Length: 85
Image (cartoon, rainbow, N blue to C red; front, top):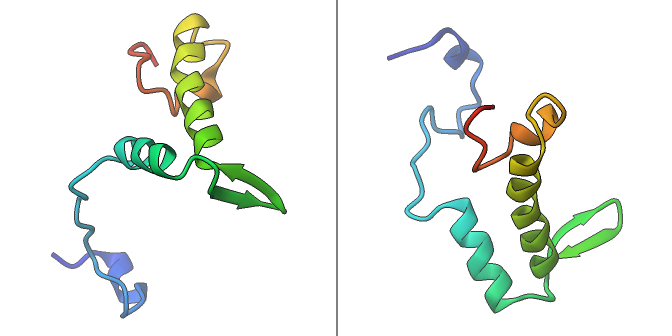
């Protein structure tokens, strides 16, 4: 099915994405276990190792369930456990 935006779509890119076999969460956990000190993200010269990224990612759902979604609207958009968002 052709969509209107496809005529502007770069030729080198596919029109559909394939769903990966593993989740982003599983990939992060595996990388943090294998390479805890290796840089996962480098942002404006600041280095975030895999272990730290995983720790921060695990803190987000806990914070989201502790606070009301009205107070933490920005956090709830990435929350895995908050059902009322």
